[in-house]
Length: 134
Image (cartoon, rainbow, N blue to C red; front, side, top):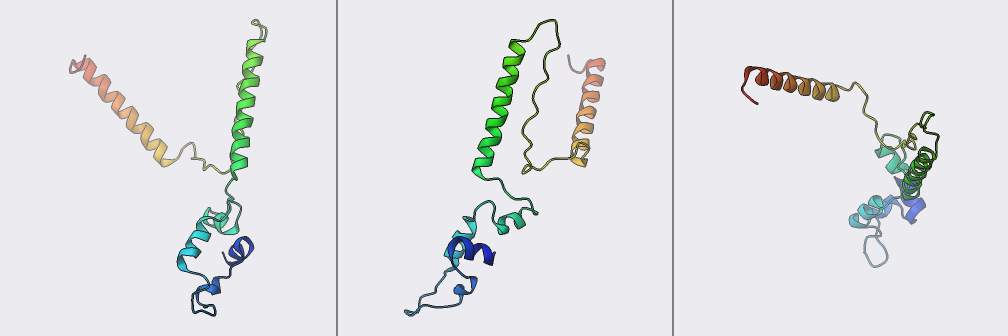
């Protein structure tokens, strides 16, 4: 954090405890909080707080969305102009968004939700066969 503050804003963390010639603090806690909240996405502090994964910049987000949009438009164009007798082209895969956390396919939460849905379905089917619901 100290290196980020120094690089981005030219302030030192020790300025919290030092005073200028008039007796005012060189850096207030409010200023420090604001500086930390406004650190850029690629700063070491924000990367460390994000488990070592750098946050994407706004340009990266826009470019990923633009890439996806152009790929889908190209796919639609290819589908519309393809021979009806041949197989249609596959839908494009989205741009890999490394900043989004992926939930494992067989995570305990997902398995529990699926099992709960199956249980509710069995209960509904049983109620229908018993005539409790139409």
